[in-house]
Length: 279
Image (cartoon, rainbow, N blue to C red; front, side, top):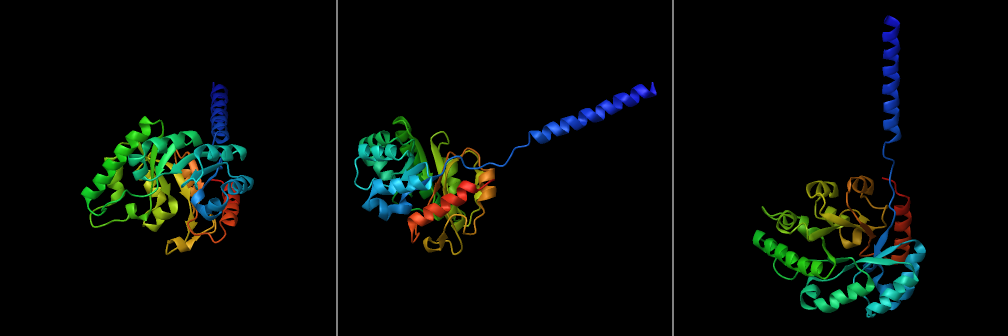
C-alpha cells in the first residue's frame, strides 16, 4: 500500500511538472510591429515639391503605410496611382473638422478614391476652449462629425496635441471629451509626444480610457517638449517598449516629426529603430 501511495505521489509530481512546463511553453513571446507608417507632414517640403518621388523614397526605406495631411494639389485618382505604384496604403488622413462639415461630398469622395479607412481630425475646431461647457461643445462637434463620417463609410478619430491633456483649474479636457463622445463613433489617435508634453503619461491614458485609442503617432524627444526638442524615434527620452506592450487595439503606428532638419534621414533612422524594437 505504501509503495502504491508513493508511486501515485510520484506521478502527481511528474504531472505537475509537465503542467508547469506546458505553461512555460505557452508564455507569450516578445512582439514586434508588423507594419510601420509615417505621417507625411514629416516630409511636407519634399512632398510638396515631388509627391511621387517622396512616396517612392518612403517605400524604399521600408514603410508600408502613410498618413496624409493634404494631397499637395494632386487629384485623388493620381494619389491612389502613386500609392499603388509604390506598394503603399494610406489607411488614414488628417482632415480638418471644417472640411467634414462644409465640404463632405468632396472630402468623402477623395477619401474613398484614395482608400482611407480613417478620417482623423488633426486639431480642435475653431472656437473657445477653456470652460467645461466649451469642451462639451467640442465633444458634440465630434459626435456630429463622426456620425457623418460613419454614414459615409469611414471611421472617425481625433489626434491630440498637448492642450487636451493639460489641467486647467478643475477642467481636464480629455476627461470631458472621453465622457461626452460616443465611443461607438469617436475614437482617438494618441500623439505620444504631445501627450507627454502636456504632462500626461501614455501608460496612464491607455489604462484610463481602454479601447478608445486606435492609432499612435510615434514621436520622440525631450524636455522642454516643443517642436524644436523633437528627435529621431529611439534617440529621445520616451520609452516606447512599455507603451507598445500595454497598448491594446492599436491598428496603426505612424512615425512623425514636426521639425526634422533632414526629414528623410529622420524617417530612415526612425524606421530602423522601430523595425527592430521588441516589446
